[in-house]
Image (tube, rainbow, N blue to C red; front, side, top):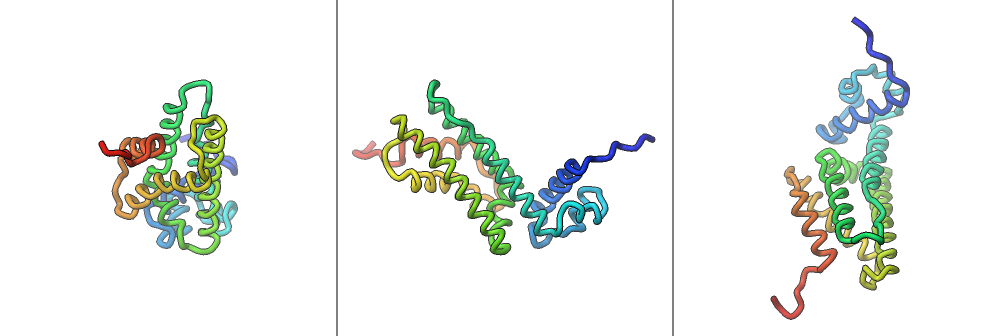
Length: 199
C-alpha cells in the first residue's frame, strides 16, 4: 500500500488548527487538552509542540483565524449599482459566518473570560468589526445614503443587533434562523422600528 504524501509544515499547522477548532467547539476550552487535539489531528504530541507552545497558544491561533474568517466575508459596496441588495448580501454573509455553531461557541462563549489575553483578543475583534462598520457608515454619509449621526454609536448598535441574538442562541444551545435575522437587521437598518404617527 502506498504511503500518503507527507504534509508541509504549513499544511501540518493548518491540520492542527482544524483539529483544535473542532475539539474546542465540542469540549470547550477548559475541557480540551493537547492530547485530544493531537488525537483528532492524528499526529504525535511532539508535532504539536513543533508548531505551538501550549493549548493556550493554539486557542489564540484558532480565534485569530475565526476573526479573520468573519471579517473577510464583508465586501465593499459598489455605489454604481443598487445599494440595498449589496447591504443585505453583506449582512447575510456576516450572519452565516458567525452562526456557524463552531464559530458562535468559540467567539461568543469560550473566548470570554479565559484570561486577560483572551479578553483583549475579543476586545480587538469587536474594535476591528466596529471600525469596519463605521467606515462603511461614514462612506454612506458622504454619499447621502446614511442619515447624519454618530457613526461610532451606530456601528456598535448594528454589531449588537447581529451579536446578541447569536450569543443568546449559543447560550441556549439552539440554532439561529439566519434568514429571519437578516430580515430583522436589514429592516432596522433601513427603516427603523417605530412607525411614528401610528399604523
